[in-house]
Every structure is written in C-alpha cells, then in structure tokens.
Image (tube, protein in one colour):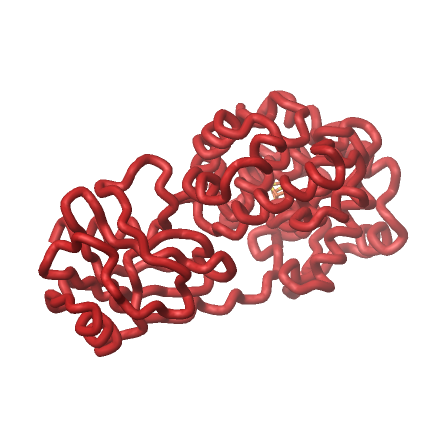
Length: 368
Ligand code: SF4
C-alpha cells in the first residue's frame, strides 16, 4: 500500500477519534440503517437468546442460508432452557448442512452452562458475557449492544473492511495485533446512543455497500469522510494475510445399505464433524478392502470420486458399495475417529445429523 492516510486522519487515530467525527459518522450511518437495512428475522427481537443464535449462525455463513436454520431452531428450541435440555443429537440434526458443526456443539454446551450458572438468564454486559465458555468478544458485543443497549463494540470481517477503508488503515485484520487495533478503533467509535443499531449498521454497510471487491461508494452514506475512497485505496483494503490453502486429504468410503437402512459411522464428539454420522471412511485402500474382508463383506471397485472442500481440508473420497445388502451392523474394525456404527433409516429422515460431505457420498452412490 503506497498511499498513506493524510496527517490529519493519522493524528486523529493516534489521539482518538474526534467527538465531531464520531457524531457525524454515527448519525449518518444509523439514519441510513433505518431506511436501508435488510429485513432479517432477528432484527425484530431484543431477546438475547434469539440474538445469540442469529450471531452464531451468521458467522461464516451467508445470511440467506442462515435464515431457515434460525427459524427452525427457534421453533424447536424457543428458549435457552429448551436448547439446554435437548439431546445433542437433535441439535446436530437441525444444524445439518449449515457446516462448522463445532458451533452447534458450543451453543448446546453454553446453553447448559448458562442454565446451571445463571438460571438461564443472559448477563447484560460484554465483560460478563465473555466469561461464558463459547461466547467470544464478537458475540458478547453483539448481545450486549443489541439486546441490552450497552455501548460495546463488535468487530467482524465486515467491520474490519469498513473501518480500514474509512480510515485508510493498512493494519492486517487477520493478525492478533491487527485485530486488536481494529477493536480499539471500534471501541473509540461506539456511541451511547443506539449502540446496537450502530454495530449492525457498520456490518450492514460492509455486507451490502462496502463489499470486498467493488465498494459502491456512490451509494455510501459515509463517503464524504472516507479516506480510502478519497485517496483511491479503498479496493485494496483491508490488508489481510493470505489464508493457508486447504490441505488435500483422500479417503475411501463404504456405502453399505440393507432394505430401508444404511450403515453409518458416528464420529467421536471432539474434532472434525464431531458427533455426526457418515458412511464409514477409511484412510485409503487397501485399508477398506482389509476391513471389509474382516467383516465378511465384498465390495464394488471405486464407483467414482466425490470432492468436497472446507476452509482447511480438501476431500477426495473414492466411493465403494458393499455388493450384499447388510442385515445387521457388520463387524468392521473401528478407527479412532469413530465411536459406533449404526444402521439408520434410509432414505435419511428429516433432521438426520449428517454432514454435507456424507450426503454427497450417499447421493453419489445412489446415482451411480
Ligand atoms: S466510501 Fe466506499 S470505501 Fe468508503 S466506506 Fe463507503 S463504500 Fe466503503
């Protein structure tokens, strides 16, 4: 980044945001939010539980994808007590397809903690909320500011982008130091008046106007104070360290079905896809062939390969089918990734706790 922020802005950041700039940004952005915000189901509530659900679901997931999950969850578990008392299997089933299943396990665990230690009542401040396991600074700030009107900031990817551009700031938002820097900036900007709306407005601006590739500066309510726009660096900001590429991993999958049932392995509760069910995966042939031989099963050759990419793993899964229908749980050797094998109703019932990768493997074996 060669074009630096002008001295006035740098000095303003060093000395703290001036009260007048803070007031002007706040007034303009909140006014814009009142008119232009998207109608999202969680924007009509001040219930901290519902806000918590929405914030966790919308992290790392597109809002349009999260909405039906949010509605299903609230219908099934209308209060934190309902969630705490629900079996984890049911929670994972409702989460099925949303990805990042650790979020579902954490929600369930935190709901239990909250019911045991706070009788199910959410603490009202960011600091207290952060003492709950599973609630970090972002989620705590969102709940405290939106549900309880505490002037507490939130910083997510959208907020980093908007602040980096307004202040022509090239701190790296992916490093701990850079994130801390943007948190300080967000703290300096937070206002006593409508802090929850201010936070949501910043995120909304980043999601709909100040977008990663082509910021729509002509439609931006704060463009007159935006240094990134003024000096022409907006599209290059924020500066973010490159994410590591997902690591390629290869497996062989066994699809063994009987009349109306399919064999699925249950993942251990910790780690990737924790607690979910999937067709058993084996490191690679000949491991699968040996396992099948041990269990007295015979296999087709690989029917083909299913590909699936997560943020940190790139799966290539060769799919095999057992040639004989299974009429009981076969005596397959169990890898350390699994805790049990089950015969599950087939086709899968609504709310089955299986990952998108598992659904792809099953669909592929059916179509082939
Ligand atoms: S003027 Fe452009 S770059 Fe600046 S905050 Fe608005 S949309 Fe983003």
